Image 1 (cartoon, rainbow, N blue to C red):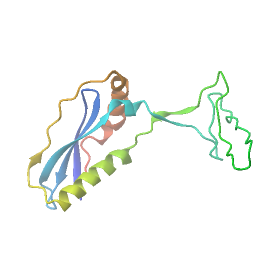
Image 2 (cartoon, one colour):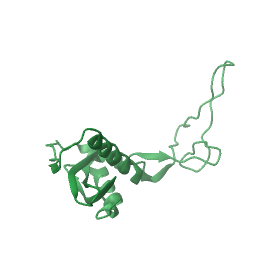
Image 3 (cartoon, rainbow, N blue to C red):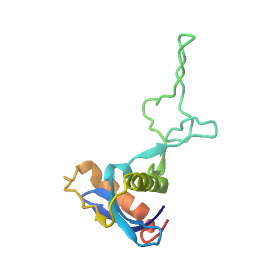
Length: 149
C-alpha cells in the first residue's frame, strides 16, 4: 500500500488531508479527502506521573477518594480551585491520520474500487467549536504535505 499526502488544509473548520492513493507502479489510483472536526485540535491529554496518577495544574498528584465499602474503587478527583494539568499538544497524532488512510485503502482494495475516483469535499456548516482547533491541527500536520508513505 502506498499513498502520498498532497495537501493539508482547513475546509470550513475541518482539518482536510488530501491523499493520492497509488497503484503498485506509482501512478495515482484514486484521490481521497480525509476530514476531522477542528475541535480535535482542542482536545488534550491529561498529564500523569510515572505511576500513571493524574496531575493537577500545580504539578501535584490529584487526591483519591476514600472507598467506603470493600468493593468501592478509589478514583482521583479535583479539589475546589484546581484544574487538571494537560499536555500542550492535541491528542490527535500522525498515527491517527495514517490509520484512517490505511483503513480506506484496505476498503478500496477489498471492494476493487475503479481507477481514477476523485472524492469531492462535502458541504459542511462551520461550527464555532471547530474554529480555534482547526488552525492548531493544520499547523501540526502541515509537515505531512508532500510526503509519500
